[in-house]
Length: 104
Image 1 (cartoon, helix red, strand yellow):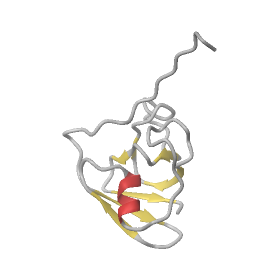
Image 2 (tube, rainbow, N blue to C red):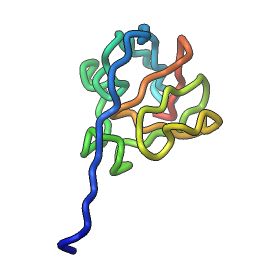
Image 3 (cartoon, rainbow, N blue to C red):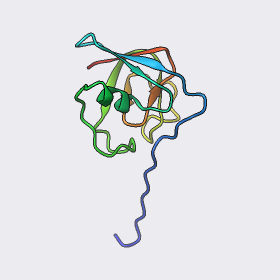
Image 4 (cartoon, rainbow, N blue to C red):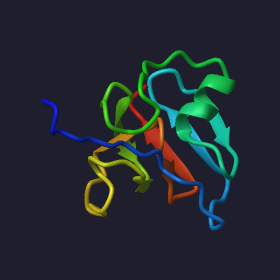
C-alpha cells in the first residue's frame, strides 16, 4: 500500500464550450448549461436533485443514461471513447449537441 499512487483530475473547461440544453425525460424539464459549466453545475443551479460525490468523474456516482444527443465526455471512464453515447458522468462532462436528453 505504501507504493501505490493514484491521481484523479477534473475535466477542464474549453474555450470551444458553447451553451446547450439538458432535457430531463422523466420530468419534461429543460435546463440551460452555459459555457464553462458542467451538466451537474447546471442541474444543481436549477434545483434538480442529483447524486454526486467526487466531482472528478472517477467515482461514477453521478453517471446518468443518455437517451439522445452527443455527450462531451471529460472523465476517465468514457473520455477518449467517442462512440460511448449511452452513459455520461455529469459532474465533469458537457454536451457536443445543442440538446442532451437524460433519463432523469
